[in-house]
Length: 115
Length: 115
Image (cartoon, rainbow over all chains, first blue to last red; front, side):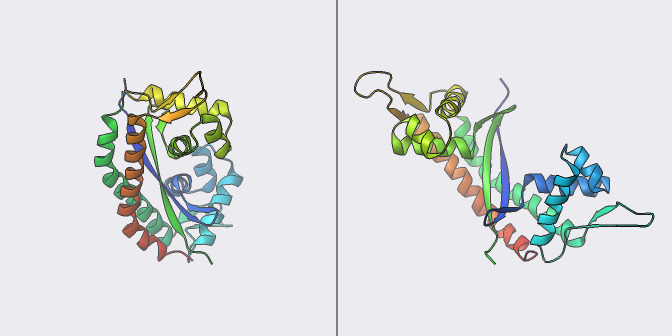
């Protein structure tokens, strides 16, 4: 039987709004990798509209936008992570790693109870 | 503006199955508190069928069932956490606390970037 494992998922929230979570962090990753919101959305199998809404929520929640886009010219449609975007993503991943590392020894106790 | 905060959500998985996560842990809590799966389901606004399915998934994933129920007699419908159920819930909450504590200082850095 495959071994059980655990995944720490961090939600950064303000009231009912998720400012940053697993989905938004993956979107930032995909934008960084693909260079456009359209390709990032396709990769994550979400609609372009939904990806834009997630970007807008993130951009509105930080002092500086996390993602900027080029509206015209030869770079039209290009999306890029700002310095703040890069930092936010990096810190978020660091939170995930810190959570995982701290919970791992506790999980070892849970595993003993499992099949 | 209300302050941002973060919530660590731990998923214990085996392949695609979530063995224990926020919803199942809350269900165990509610069963412990209410003493029946029906009342626990109502409290969490989930169907009785769904609550039973979650209980079955948990019970099948551990060496001992986490929840036992009384099928007849004056205690009919009564549900209770087993010793393993109590332990699993306690360890799960401990994982959440460990994750939160470890991620908190990292989150302080993220907050500085936020509105």
